[in-house]
Length: 334
Ligand code: NAD
Image 1 (spheres, helix red, strand yellow):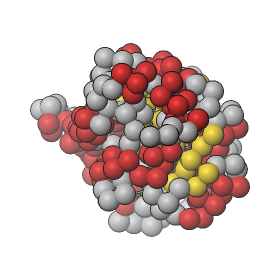
Image 2 (cartoon, helix red, strand yellow):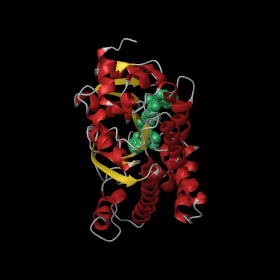
Image 3 (tube, protein in one colour):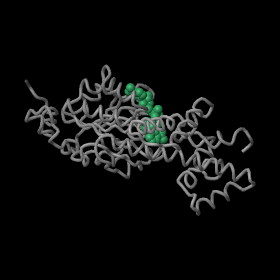
Image 4 (cartoon, helix red, strand yellow):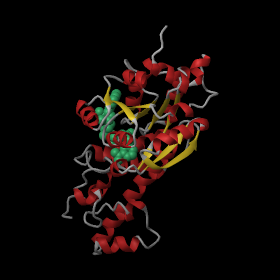
């Protein structure tokens, strides 16, 4: 059998292939993924994935990309990526794969479905799934990847579309610690805080805990601001008092839900852009599933989940999650 130069390079980059091991758990894939000619596969080029993949290209990586939406693929092709026709084709061409998909079911389909990643994954491939999904699905994918000699880590993100564009995301990484340096080297092209959280699924655990608290503080900020305004307080004055007092939180200070209190936040742009109500409802559902499985009482998380689910059946479903202020306030003039 004749080997091409690229095949030889791939073998050289990954000694486990030369040695013929089918299970590479005892080897770090770091050297392979730090190789200058390593190719990165990117699957899911939406609001977050599009700018993240673009940043990888800007940092000099060769990217092979796939999305079910052809317009998103064309945009990334213009930015310099090679386009694939399926997740399997990405897997066949890439040394590492990053996925940024909406939910657990999309991730399952993309990895285990027909023409999915696991049909063509190569031993030694590093997989980083940055979607926010059920931690148990991350564990399931990691076990399947391991059977193929690949390494799966969960790496969900905090920070919205602007952080994705500006490469300032926080990544919460779960998986084998030996592989963290390789993961970090790639994730640093898209983020500024790369945090190792422990075993696979722990990145998702950190993410859904953070988002449960975020939803609770956003609802609390919204009802507080609404009460103050109904008592006759100017919203900017009230926000400035809260933000120098013990009620201060990220939702009040940096993402205030009342239109006009802050510039450049979704509330001042008719709640457009940002982090959608439907995605917040999904994350709260993940937190509730995890709370049920671990027998953990989360009364405010549960109530927040119900509030966001009700919002999903209104015209606020497609708006930013800070539109919970509008939901609480009702239809009075703002
Ligand atoms: P999005 O809906 O904008 O993008 C998802 C992309 O995945 C779309 O382009 C869609 O076409 C593609 N896709 C769906 N199924 C696919 C498949 N089988 N194969 C290939 N592509 C497929 O979502 P987003 O806002 O980019 O969010 C992605 C993930 O990041 C979600 O899990 C979300 O919870 C999380 N997240 C989002 C934000 C945010 O502010 N938007 C912030 C933090 C985390």
